Image (cartoon, rainbow, N blue to C red):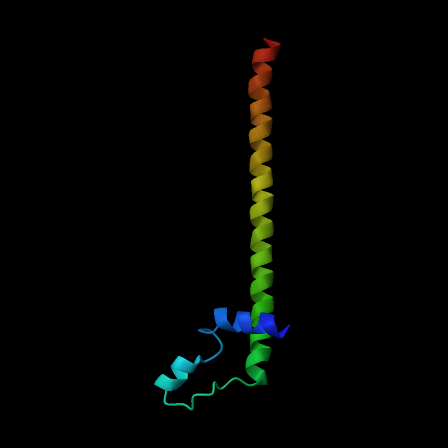
Length: 85
């Protein structure tokens, strides 16, 4: 899990963790001020973000399935009118 934490920390650094450059600008000591509470907050954020992303992906997939099915039904009716008459 730590490798995933580091990657997540890199991508979410502007939200949760002060990067060394921000620390240097703020005049803080160069070792980054990351403690366990940062990681707890980060884990919660990563979990909620992942949940939101998965929810949106599910919504998009379901919408696409409905859209494709409706196109298929319309197309089949369109073809059927030429076949029947």
